Image (tube, rainbow, N blue to C red; front, side, top):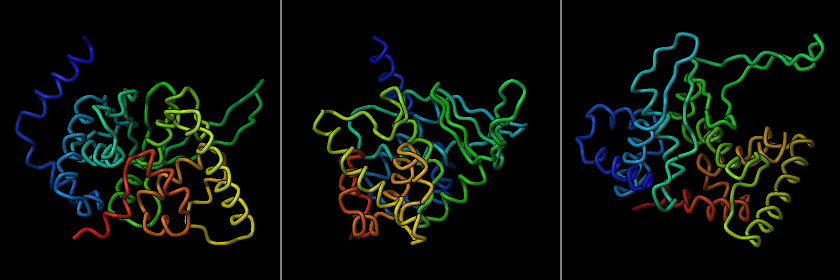
Length: 257
């Protein structure tokens, strides 16, 4: 019953006129949009609209939420949904919290002693179903395609990773065989990134991915969407793995007629 009602509400939403200003926001703030086919552009705009409507949006430290913020963030997240079948629209995310710029997480204390330093962050994905983002960093990464960095993709990838109950670098996969293959490929690539970063070599994937396997999946997802042509050449197995997961071939976006 709940699924039927959700689908009905979404059909009703998509049947109403599209806000005129939203497409201009997408074209200005999401550089990927111009690479997409007409069909994928339409699909992105539909998914974007559902995300804007269904999520709770909250400004932090007095920030006033605008349509530009919601449309930009939802549009970037919708890139990740273009190949996924069915009605999935990050249903497990309930709220998106936005700071104007980087924000600080207080250090952790134990018995009155500071055991972790205060962190300055651009974003976070919480197990409870919330995504936290710095608007200035969202806008910078969205408008500058090809630098290998995209904050929205990074944090929403963490959410996908956690759908199986833990953020351990392996999102939910359909079979045991797929899980074994995922681990084998990502472990080889993780160790390769770690060795390259340790030796000072310039890496295509952000070396922050060496932090742990969860960060490796998030940074690899950024690279998959931001620098797909190079990733397909230099990290072929990993690219194919992510292509099967997202059901997308973003490198092909660059070679459309």
